[in-house]
Length: 249
Image 1: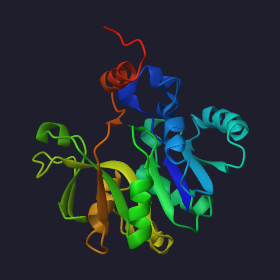
Image 2: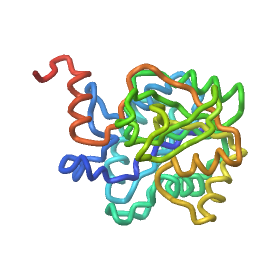
Image 3: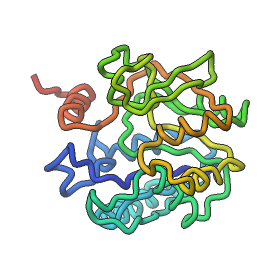
């Protein structure tokens, strides 16, 4: 299995700190968010990690990779750089995935993770579920608030099977949302290109999942430990304080 970690955005809502530091390299618990993602996969049989970013922040991730290769001997860490230097040029998540698949010669089962995910759980359960079913599988989380759900991709499920998906709906039908953690079997990787060739929305993965569930069975697994989308300065400060030994009063 290979992993693509999406780090191609510009995080304009976290400006000014993300004018100079890419969001996945912001620190929580004394280390970059990206390190937490890699650590959560320590026991997974991931033989290659691809960091997908843009030209503006490429040097930051080159430095991070050079340091992590020393700290994690045996881990294959590669960088794919999109030809984009500001928010108006960004590829969007799904176009970025396809670009990484093509330019990284990905030909294996794929674990896909948004690089702004911060969570307090291991990914063993979703990996086990995927291995048992060989179906596309999504990590889900219950935000327990319809108002909060408006900010995310909202899922409707029948048991483990996902039967509905709406990206940032004004009237959410549930409080169950996608965390931005997905696994796809290698035989389905061609569907990213098929989706884009159909002139579908190239950005938020939720649009792709909505399209996918009309063609394939897609499963979900609900995590109940802490999970955060580091999307705003307020959320970032909240998480830093929650996981600090000396939280601000």
